[in-house]
Image (cartoon, rainbow, N blue to C red; front, side, top):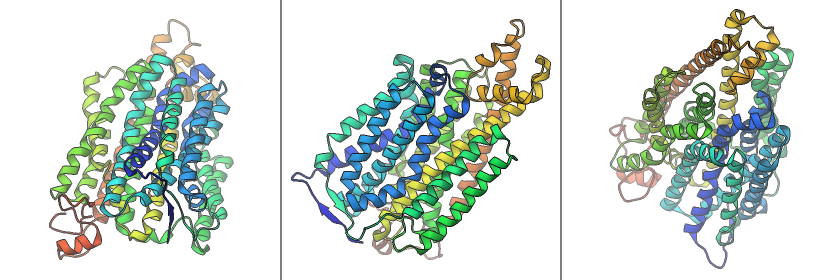
Length: 540
């Protein structure tokens, strides 16, 4: 695939890389930062659980659904132009989020922010692919991946500080400021198009987007409508039908937005599985832990953000150490497998959490999860892109990022539904000693508790019983949270084993340095290339 490139009068690859990475850093921060602000948004806008969940879900859903479509459009209209439009849309939607006083309108503008984020991510990746070549391209994508990881990591702590100091609206205003700074660098970015791109895969875009939307809607509404209700079953069946239609469409169109043949490459698929698993083991904690801290332990948003630094700070520093170890010969297979196993172990250890648990007791498992995330941050992106043929790197980047974002959206929706269902069950099992409640009241109490609000359900309880009722709600939420942690641990540990097996050597003969260099997968110190994907049995 040829690419037409038009460079500005002054080309500054360093500025281009910095601007794209700054933009990519704020995109995941908008997800995890918003999760910290949810309790305050709920109080200020008087929001129920489901519309409150869509503050996060609508952003993530739009981000994931429109990644591939935005990439196709960028090939036609120009990558820099698409990057600029996406940044402007993201900034304006962030401004609208900060100004709105209606929860449904907030959900809508958050979806628009997700659409802008999709344009920024896809166009930014393509801009880097035209601004850098060879080993420099691999390093650029490594920095890009590290920026995304840093955004996930810094989102909760920075948002906690902003919410505690200025209120939840400041979180979205900060995203506007970053978008404005990024726009200052657009003029020095190269413009590029794909001369062979003429149309957008409309049918594929519609079926993929609707499939993911119906799946998420069914999962989110499952605890509210009942998992066996015709509505939920219809949504899930519809999602499956549309997904099958998407696969058929992509097999037949001349220029598919998703190259399904990449699914037949075990190593690439193993690398795509890493962020999928981390969406459960790490991203879900970023979203749900702040509400637990504020609701059960009584921490302020500012303190909750500070506590989240135990989880996030290792993501900023561990990649530096891991990068040095990889350059000295540590195999990528071992690094990525260890990453998932560490996260799984940390999630299992975190089940010690409780309303009276000392901070020191939860600090160690949170740090362990952060270390596990940091082990793969900044490494897996570059390795994934260089694991396929150079001419398919753009498609591989789009597929990798789509799987990452779609898995984050689904992981949050699925585990949120699990947490709500488990909390409702715990409340139903013990509510009789406080006078009982019908099914609708149990659901309302469970929804409130699962969002981190224990005070509202307790307001209607007699003053003499209120302390015991609050303890009961806290214990119900804690039990549900612990079960969720065990599920996260199981998912990440199992994924670690699968990744290790999928990245195993294809032959018993060790690859020579020349073969590895020719494939672009050698990890020799100083050559700047991404490390070997366990093609050398000795190193693996």
